Length: 364
Length: 110
Image (cartoon, rainbow over all chains, first blue to last red; front, side, top):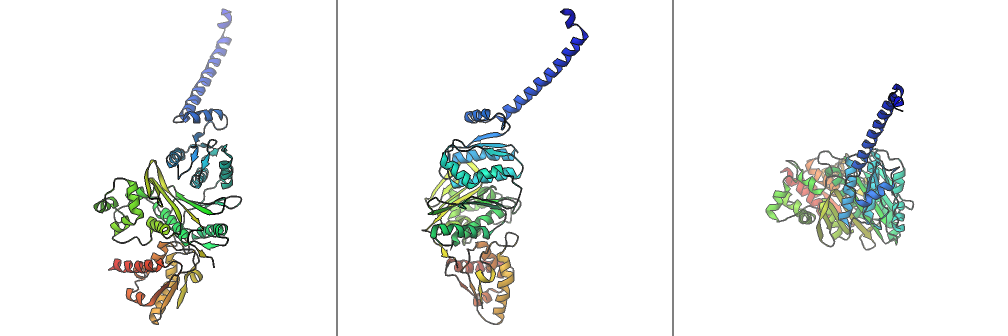
């Protein structure tokens, strides 16, 4: 046997085998390192889910959605979830959303999911997810067009539109101020609530103000570069329409803090602090919505402009249930509830509703 | 002389300038409001602007359209005050807002 192992033929075979064995081992070690790298920061349930999906989605970042995926009532958990998605977007990483345990979802969360899919796919990053086990949540997500967006190709565009099969969840996005969208959506939804097409000037004004804000302030350097996203949802009993509007800009406070010399709100904090005492951004947002910031900094009343103007439409009963979320502030304006978010949202999200009890005019 | 914004310009007025969106306050002012206002001033007539019938106004549209009369077109405040009359049965608060935009523009250029 010794003679065999010393033969040149065997030694050559042994060398070749050793080389390929080392190559295979190095490849395995690199694969393992890469796999472990993708698992950094994942919770136990996310890891367990990922390992089940080993073959198809092994290089996706698996992000588990909270059970209550409701922006208005579970905002901290939702924005923590959104932060993970945003990190993947910034890092060009593929995302797999684990939605199977979601038991409750609201319209603002649907808007965040829809905008997430389109934002990822429009820049060529894979985005996928599973179905919720809860039948109601699954039905709402399917109706909203979320899974259609996952399946279909998305081409980068200035305007996007996702319509549900029955036209009761409508989602639009654009970079411009577009009154046509607001008018079309209000006309359609008002037929369901009032039985005939109506004009809701308060809603239209709110939409135009928000679109303007996104166009002018969502990016601190350039105008008109960020999309705004609007989702409109008719309730099942046709009594109420909810509007969710968002942009993924810098948020109200970051935008204000970056105003340069010569701009209206430059050094706004020091000017405001001479007249009012405040400790945190929630207190400042209350001053903003009451028009105090505009009046203090410019010396003039706000005259219907911006966020205080939107708050005014609620006081005139043109809209209801106004919520504003921006940077680290959550505001339920109607109930005067202002609180600090644990996980800030880089952007602005505004939610409101209309029903038969709100003011509107007949469509001529 | 009368301008009905919804019929003579657009049922869906939009943004401040054409760069931001179509049917802007800038376009309304330059194509309709200024020519008719100048004519009304020359012939000492009233110009009535009827704001009813639209889908709704953004404040930037109104500020650019009416504040811009002084800021951009340099029409005298006294002439505007004498000539321009606003109608808004559906949103009465718009009249006060617009009058303030015109007054603010006058104070800005002083």
